[in-house]
Length: 233
Image (cartoon, rainbow, N blue to C red; front, side, top):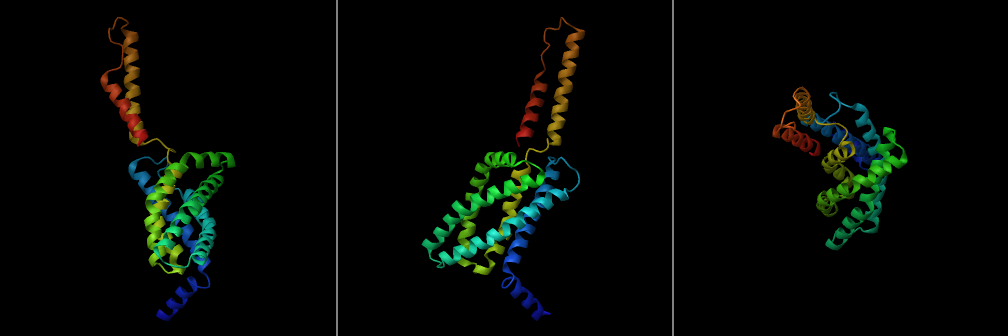
């Protein structure tokens, strides 16, 4: 049993390394989306009450498409910069940030958008709108992650290591991709109260034109503020 496990492990990270890297890219992105969907339901911001398998499936396909480029990029980087000195690791991190990060961000948004049925122009517009926030978070999470990767992780396991850490990153990507798709139920609650109060205020003014104060009460204004805050968060 142990011998079989070792043989399978050796093949996964030897002859079939690119397959392992590709499948793990898709699997981790799907896992990240599953976690994000659960967070959305707990926060009450999900437009769907049930789990969206199609959405996770789309991101799984996007992850699969990014697996081979990940594999090729890290193999090339190790070939060009094989040493593990501080200077070389710094160069690898900069290459990752300025070459890989923008490439994988644009392929993520373009691929996911096209699978959703968006046009290339719509997908590109979404990428341009969301890339600054994505790239800023990229600089927070990936330089320290890649420093550990390039210093300590053996070359065959680098994509797998990145994919494990990527679960956090993929949750964020799923959030960025799908944020703003639904209004929080709490926001709908405050909006409903505010609108009902405004209607009552208007009806009161119609019934009593001599009313000196036909304007909404401070409570209505507070409810509207709560609505705006819920939408913004």
